[in-house]
Picture (cartoon, rainbow, N blue to C red):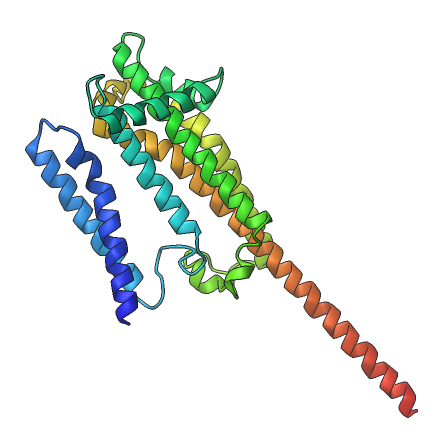
Length: 286
């Protein structure tokens, strides 16, 4: 009980720090805006605390199947922290800001190729956007997308090589997928595979579709709102890591469906073996 309370409190504090980090680190022209961000951080922290302090989850998936949530949260926290450092770098910033800008620029050099999501994110800005804003957009998008690819690759390694989640013990679908009803519909395996495929497709396409939709809606939404560093950081981070989270969810669901199929095959094989032994004993009796 005490351990669960401490873990829930620690998670709530980390989430609050993540939400408030850009507002606390970056200069803001609005004092009210900073207060609103801090209030949102406290509300989100309260929700996380109540979720992890309860015995059964209500909306957080894979709560008892680490390290999915740790992987996603760690990637988001690191991405937001690095993008904050990149946004504060002006050529005369601190050493940390300079290192973060160099790393972000390096990842952008790797991923800024024609028709890549990083290149598409730069096209969201209007042609008359300042060169500084275009450069920051390129570097932040490059690092955020690199982190997205990295966590997807790490989870793929965990599934294929480390045999996730079999090494963590029995996987409870009811507890780890509270938003998924395994009794609805016909075969749970088919539904898991279908949901997994949908998540994988969306996770792959969204980094390409979001910049295109934003460009089309530029008459309604002014893309120059990205001049605000806090807006830029959250838009870029969510653009890259939300699709990555969908791909991880899709791989996890496919893996669970595969485990259910394997368990069924073992049960069928055991039943057939038992039937065979029963028939053999009957023949011996006759």
